[in-house]
Length: 114
Image (cartoon, rainbow, N blue to C red; front, side, top):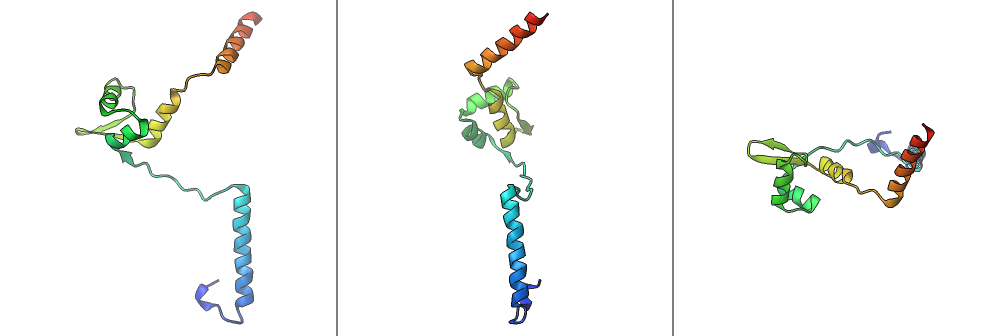
């Protein structure tokens, strides 16, 4: 329905159209679906990486030199991607006592079955 052509005679059609649009939006919200938007991977510099990780520049340079931290080098500049840095942080998660105990029990059960 064209927005510019709403006249007194077309109002019932316009209202019906709006109601159907609102109903569609409501069903999408209830289902928890949102339009798929792909985030852009924009490289960040070392300053932003320091703020994101919470480490000093020399520490970042050391981690890059040891090839521990994912980075890209173009010329003399280091570049990072935010999602890769957050993934790197998540990989360093320490296990809880409960997780360690469950792993030990699983290993013990495997050996006992032999």
